[in-house]
Length: 208
Image (cartoon, rainbow, N blue to C red; front, top):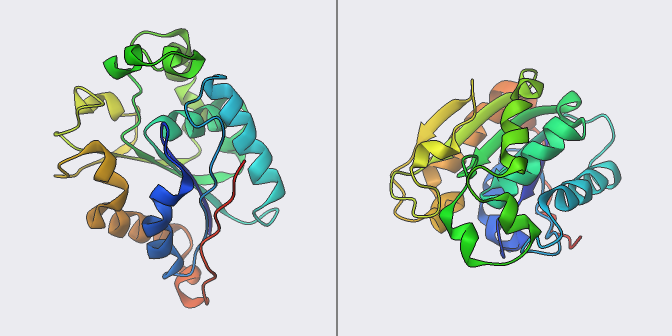
């Protein structure tokens, strides 16, 4: 399985490298690019377009694809799947603490992307209205009750998704939670069981 991961607000792809290594160890090919601007100041659809370009250029055409998004990155992935037709080729979407009901922290930083992450924004409403586009994709959501970025943590849910509650102490530590990595490995094995028997390549990290 080709797996493309999208980092969160002000993060880089390096944050997701431990998760990448866990998946690579089971035969999957992982890509953890850094998308700019990292604060989403040009808007989340701008980052979504860059994700679409990355997917067109990097993973092998026609190969099974899974997407992982963390926090702001989950919004970027979801927009790609719903608005840019990504759901037609993706097998799975693993959403880690995506602020689908917004976050009050978005009021603390200027820029179009943070305005789109505020509760009740037109961007968030459009994602909710277009949720049926995900019907063909296996969707999993991950959250922690201790999250101070997404309050309440149920704001990370997507309709009809399979939800996993993790007892992780911090929002920023969720991508490194061993239970999360193990769960994603298990679900990818169900989607592409032969991957575990292939040799794995090193983690791919790029800047976009």
